Length: 294
Image 1 (cartoon, rainbow, N blue to C red):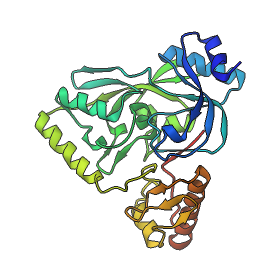
Image 2 (tube, rainbow, N blue to C red):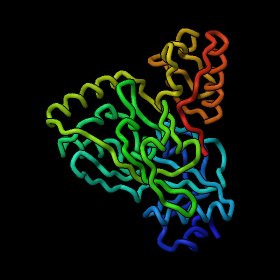
Image 3 (tube, one colour):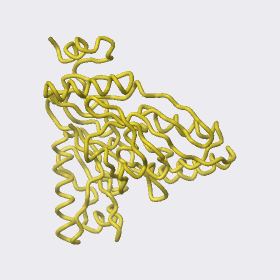
């Protein structure tokens, strides 16, 4: 029996399939394949699926938009769990309840249509809400954790809620990454504003992102240290344009690594080289912003 067939034997209604190609579903465009993928339809099905995986020792990982992750080469003999079944959006005053599978673009359009402001800094960031909450996505002007008032989560056999404080949001970090908890929805707090003002702020952030490097990348690779931006440190070490195989440090923004036909091993080796050189020459230990899969 195939991996997806085994899952469907336990969950007849589960949307699942074989041979998930990481390169096709991530912005960096490299990596191997997973034996199966699954898209649970609700929290209970997800919790039950996770319980089965734990009980049968089936490896699994979560994947949202695939924008800030580095999958590994070769075969992942497990299940990639996606959140296409969690796409509901509902406004209750200035609060918005949003499913993990909702994209950033859809959330921002919904907010503008309902005269809700506060999330404009997310403009242009490739994301789904679940991944963004788990990784506390954002920019200098704000992070999605600043908007969160509560999160609905799943672990094997259980669906539950966490307050914003319990999420332990940090700089591109949260409890969800540390303890492998699935985000299935969140309540975000907004404030009322005029649509024209919301669009003006969105244009501001859109223009800021227009100068970022083009090509296959994971976005910023490293979290900015307090004393100096990661890109400035990498540039100061003369690493712009440095290449390993098909991976290259961008000449436009040194905190971006571009994949130009390389493998995950190339990207990983280049990350290691950059970290080693920056620590040796500046004493600063860079922390990776990207998440390794699986």
